[in-house]
Length: 153
Length: 118
Image (cartoon, rainbow over all chains, first blue to last red; front, side, top):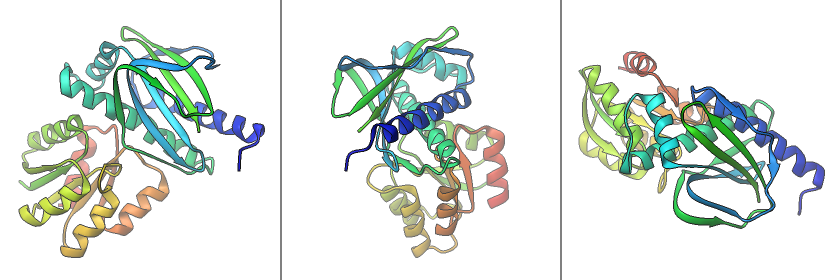
């Protein structure tokens, strides 16, 4: 059964607010968030991490940015330079921590979700198979931009 | 000093845990990247303590805890997961985990949990 527009809007709001709260909690770097916008074009990226969301709300969470942005965030969080396989692993884990915190925060609003383990996306990638996509850009001080996509199936 | 098996699908997280636990004076006797390997290595290495992630490919952490406890009821397991909702914590504790650490963690939180459980 398809979701009503009202239910879809509610789910987007819950996921979006939960994701932004989670971002603030997990990444200890000052950042500015741009106004969320509905993605009107196909979702294309070159580096990022995808987490599947199942349960009361079904969708995906994608964090995308330059590898150097993920690396600088990792250095800031764990005090070590990250490159190669360790950067890839950290990127996946960052997605896992943000999605995990999202699951925890929206559980308090009686919305129960589970998350999949992270998939790191590298190279020119186009993501499809979603119903609606919301994009929020976050600008981290001295680290650069991270694009956060909340996709609803 | 305790012998410890570290379980997490992320190599980065295993490295972090190994670093913290080694600095606390413990010996890392094995690593597992999913629950199934953790069950196998737990039987093979019989560590004093196991750290266990939850969301992992092949076999998740809660199922792995149940399997390990089935064969070794005395196994000491600390969950270490990004998922911290009450239901998840309860499920892990009911499966037999002794403590639950939410990522991202601090060295102090790891030390507190290990000291409590051992």
